[in-house]
Image (cartoon, rainbow over all chains, first blue to last red; front, side, top):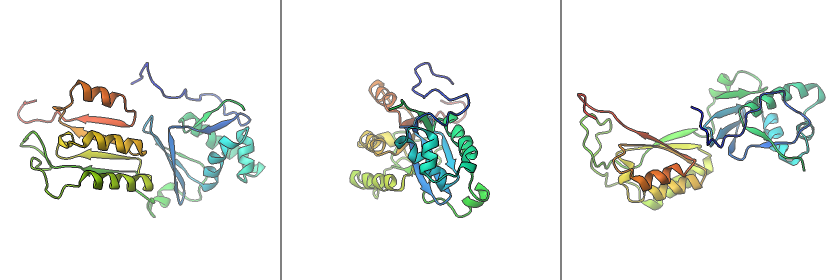
Length: 104
Length: 135
């Protein structure tokens, strides 16, 4: 049920902006697993699976880079893989695991 | 629940090797209860003399935090009959261990309700089970 006083972040409904700054949401805990990581959102109680360690590296790199594209590069994502990671990050943004942050 | 991106193989195959730790677990903090329901699934009522002390409970919570167990489901017994229940609840949520607890609700007064409402890491389940139309 929707709550008027909800503190949930607004869900991203449009295309994912790879050139914007993003970060792991403050209320989300990432737990490393051999397949990647579990992400638990303490606000929404939602559990997500990050199915590769490379994606986990990207998510952890987001806060330290001015764009998701640069975070991908820093995590070793090749140009040819970028579309797949963009799709994955869009999914994480829709579920609130990552969130847009103000540009520095 | 959602699964995101690019592991080799199916997630279900990955799970065959298990997780590094539980996602959540159930903790019967006490068997003591202020009611005596005939349908009680755990035959609760009397306090188990081997019940963990406050310090032991906090040590368990510390371990859950290290393991990154995301939350515990606390039952019993009636967990609120423990004098240290609220202390333990606050300790768990301050250590990144969310709490969902089951209660008969009889000890949730206005102050307790306000305390629960102020804590974003707590979910409460109030049992309304009963026999023969009672409750």
